[in-house]
Image (tube, rainbow, N blue to C red):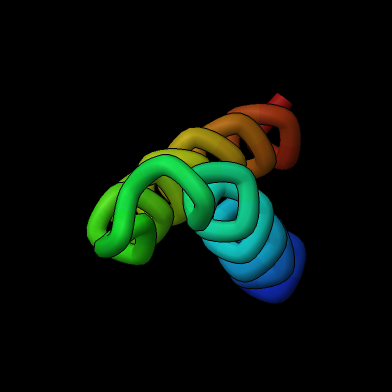
Length: 52
């Protein structure tokens, strides 16, 4: 569960950072928080699915 969420965190962080690299110089400052949000959402979703 944690490993899947961690993979999602890395993927979202990299994808958002690469997508905004041309427009925003410090795109990592947007990529990391979006990755954290994706991590939390996926972890909560997987935890809820496991509980059922």
